[in-house]
Image (cartoon, rainbow, N blue to C red; front, side):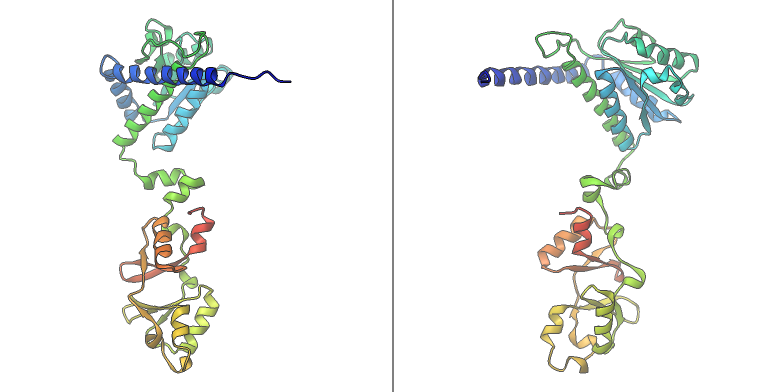
Length: 326
C-alpha cells in the first residue's frame, strides 16, 4: 500500500518555488534600471551591428536555456544557432568566425567547458556577450559586454539546484530577442516565413498561400449561357462560378442556392439572370483565418480572392481546415 502524501504541503512547496522565481524576475527587472540596463542596450547594439550570426552556448541547465534563446533569436529575425561547448572543443569552434557574436551563459561564470570558446573569441576578435551571476568570474571579466544577473537565492532548499538563475537567464535572453525584434520591425508576416508549420504558421497563413488559381479558377464572362456555366461548375469542382465583365472585374457569382432559385427554365437563362451580384470576396493579402471567419459568418463554403476588383483565386473552406486553421 502506498503512503498517502500531504497535498497541502506539496501545494505550499509549489507556491513557495513559484513565488521565489517570480521574485527573482522582479529583481531582474529592477536591475535593468540599476546597472544592467546599459550593458543590455550595448548587447543589443552589438548584435545589430554584427555581420554574422549569434553563437549561443552554455553547459548543463544553462545549455538548455541557451538552446531556447538561440531558437527564439532565430525565429524572430536574428540569425543564431546553438553550439555545445564540449563539441566546440572537438572541432565545432570552427562554427564561429570573425563577424559573429558569441553569447555565453553560465551562472557561475567559471564553467570549465566554456574556457575554449572564451579563448577562441579573444584570439580571433569575436565579440563576446556573457550572462552570469558572479561579477568577478572569468566570463564576466573577459566579455566585451557583461550581463550580470542579480544575486538571488535558488528556489529550492539547497542552493545547488539551478532554478531562479536559469529563469533569469531565460528571461534575459527573451528580452534580448524581443528588443532586437522590435528594432528590426519584425512583423507577423516575417514570423510566418520562419513558422510555416504548426498552429502558429496556420494562424499567420495568408489567402495567397492557400488559394487555387490559374486554370483552376471557375470564371466565365458576362452573357455566358447557363448550360455552359454548369459545365464549368462541374469541371472545376468548387460548386460555384464567378462572372466577370469586359474589364475582367468580378461582377457576380452563381452558387448552388442561385441554381435552386432558378430551376424553372434554367437552361434558357444566362449567368447574368441567375448570379448574385456584389458577392463576398477576400483580398489576396488577407490572413486565411479572416477568410474562414467570413465564410462562417456568411454560411458559405467558397470565397473568390481578389486583387482590387479582379478575381485572382478561389479559396474553399476545406483549404483552411486542411491547413489547420480552425
